[in-house]
Length: 227
Image (tube, rainbow, N blue to C red; front, side, top):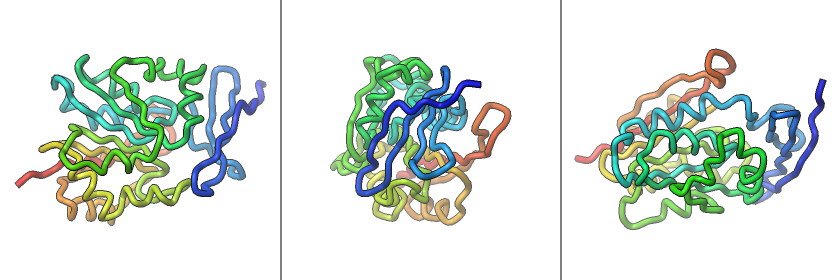
């Protein structure tokens, strides 16, 4: 049986710990040092793919659509969005940790068919929060696969995204009828209520980590309501 080989490590900003990047054959893993569980595995990506499919479905015929992806991960969310959007569309992916971008530019990128090489992709290395502080609505869809969903796991500053202030910034950054899609490790009734208070209509979907098996994850679909 093949064993895991550690390839690299990366510091999570603001004392969030350390990421460990490993490989076993054609399989890659990212986990937080000192924990047993994985944050990501290259063989388990169905719910990340569903995040994009559900969040971008209504844009499949839209020319020059603008989409923001929060969190690069292993590239599956980005790749699925690119597969849906038109050739004239643009996706900005915000990734806080530069090493994660570097890993996706290497052999890991082959797993999701190298979405960073697509000319429609623009990478922002930094907090997605920086891209939400804008004066005019810019995005047709915002896809967030940041940390563990509404309750941050590795980086406490991520909690701002799901706060009242964060949801207000997201609402303002979306164009009329824009869609916010959020990946979450599980359901969160209170967060659904907060999305509605922020001005969104909300639908939730339960999806498997793998196509037909594995843990169940939650996708929040929040559409901007314009009076």
